Structures are given as structure tokens and as C-alpha cells.
Image 1 (cartoon, rainbow, N blue to C red):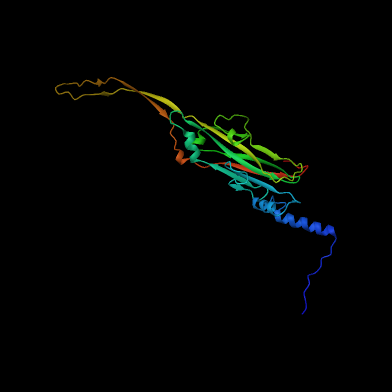
Image 2: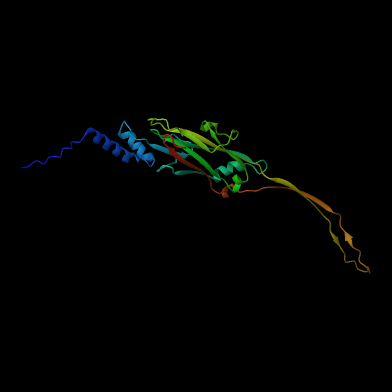
Length: 247
């Protein structure tokens, strides 16, 4: 009986190291930003990461790593949507209106010498939000997002510089869209006078009669339907850079 033996690979140590790095790069999707799932697999499977990993996620505030959507490619855009539910709070009452604060969480990670920046592009049109005043702020925490939040409106952030890091911890940042709705109201006044000619038997020339003028006033208010609110969006687009690059 002949016993088969496996070929013996005898290569310089440098070749073996190169192969290991290439294999790791394929596993985590180097050059494409990787995916959140691959990042988690890599975290469980090995204690050392020879190549950098990028993670980017957007959603309603939650435990880091548990947001609604995560990017699957470097430079991908993620969308946060809001509409009827938030419009109902914003609409308030017909007489005084209302206000709403919408918090958004952004998770990110950029390992190695890779920097990460992103921009937020709001798309708010029509409905109660379209008839309101609103602003988007970057805040320190979910709790800091209230209807009284003020500050300098911004649409950009750079959570990771190109300084080297091997951390596996996600960084969470928070945004707050604050909107206020004040109903458009006004008054209308009108005066009406009625003039007519009565049919009077025996009168050769009927006499024209003018009734006493009547004046009436009304208050009008803007009426909207929060249930018919269109979908509004905040689009988050991220980019990564290497040392010497421009975010």
C-alpha cells in the first residue's frame, strides 16, 4: 500500500508573510471599505489585523453596531428617512403648532492610516416639514437632541483622521434635526349690502329698497394633514483618505 504525502512548501519566510497579508486583505475587503459583517467575522477570527477595516452606519439611536443600515462599499451613501410619525408631533395643534427633534446616530470605524469623513444632505420638501422652519445640528449625545437645541448648523464631520489606529471600537456621533411649525393664520372681513325692488300691488312705480348692510369677520388658519406627509431624507455620504490625501 502506498501512502500519499502532501507536497512540502519550502519558500522564503517573506513569501509566506506576503501571502498571509494578501489573504487577510481579501477576507476583509481591503480597498473597498469592507462590510460590517466582514468586520465582525474578522474580529472573532483573529487577534491581529494586518490591513485596515472601514465601518459606516446610520440609523435611529441604538447600541453601537446595531443601527438600521451599514455600508457595504467604500464611499456608499446611506439614507435616514422620516415622515408622518414625526409630522404628527410637529403639527401640534391648529392654533399654536408644535415642534419636534429627530436624533440620528452615525457609527464609524477607520483602521490603519485611513481617515474617514462624511457629509449630510437634507431633502425636506412639502407637507408639515415643508411649511416649518428647521435646522440640522451635530450634538454630543442623543439626550442633547431636544426641541430647544440650538447651535451652528453644519453638514460635515471627520470622526477619523489619517493617524494610525488599530482600535476595533466603533465611534458613535449624533445629529439632531429640529423643526418648528407655526400655523399661518389671518382674518377676513367683508361687508354686504342687499338692494331689491319689492312687488307692491297698486303702486305705479315700485320703490327700490336697500337692506341694512351687514359686516362679518372670520379667522382663517393653515390646515395640513400629517398622515399624508411625504417621506423626507437625510443622506449620509462618507469618503476615506490615506495620509497626504484630502478628506
